Every structure is written in structure tokens, then in C-alpha cells.
Image (cartoon, rainbow, N blue to C red; front, side, top):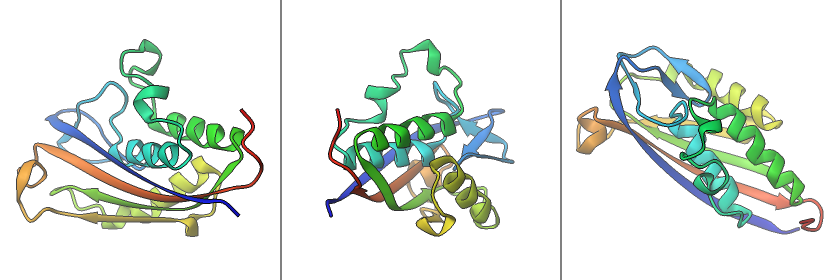
Length: 164
């Protein structure tokens, strides 16, 4: 069986009075991400990891921030399209591991909901997704609450020969 590993990273600046979307759910907070889409760094990092594992370029190639069709788009739509693209190329998701870096708010109580939302969006089991949150101990742009970052690592496997 052909296994492939991908990693992804995304970062967005934070600003007051914007919604904060993480892992497909809205989190109550006084700040949200400045972005062309909904700014969901967790999903963006996950899309990049999946696309990279399949050698299908990156999220900016498939969903450019210069395209008005993606203005304000729900990142779950981008994730669903990414997984569909992988399937078109003969790949399935083995597992995904995400780390969300933010100083505040604390999201540990929301992680089960994030995992369920991502699993449903990707058409996989909740047990195939790990989500962790960490601070940067008040260091750097994350620690100063100027931005938020996310890392994703995925394992995909080939289920049929590459089609396109």
C-alpha cells in the first residue's frame, strides 16, 4: 500500500470584532482572523497537509485569495473539496493530527466538537483526527495575541491508481 505523509501550516492576524473560526466551529472571542475566507487556520493547515501529501500543490493554488468565489467562504467547504480531490486521485485519509497555537481563548472544552466537525466534513471517523491546543507562553505574535497559527500532519494512502 502506498502511504504518504503531508504537513501544513497556516497563520492569520487577529483583529477585534471579527468571528473566530477554528476547526469548523465558531469560538466566542473578542478577536477573529483577518482573511479572505473565514480565516480558519486549523482547516487551512489541514488542507495544505492533505494536498501536500498527494503532491497536489497547496490551498492557495486550488482556492486563491484573489478569487471572489472564495471571499468569506466557510473553510469546511474548502476541506470537503480538498478531500474530494484526493479521492479523485485515488487517496484516502488515514489520520490527521492538528496543533492550534493561540494564547487565548482556551479551547480544550471545544476540541471534541472540532474533532466531530472535521470528521463529518472529511467523511472519516472521529478517531482518525487528533486536535491539540497550546499557548506560546506569551512569546511571539501568538503570545502577544496578534495572531494565531496551526500545524497539521496527515497520513494518506492510495486506494486506487492515480486517475488524472
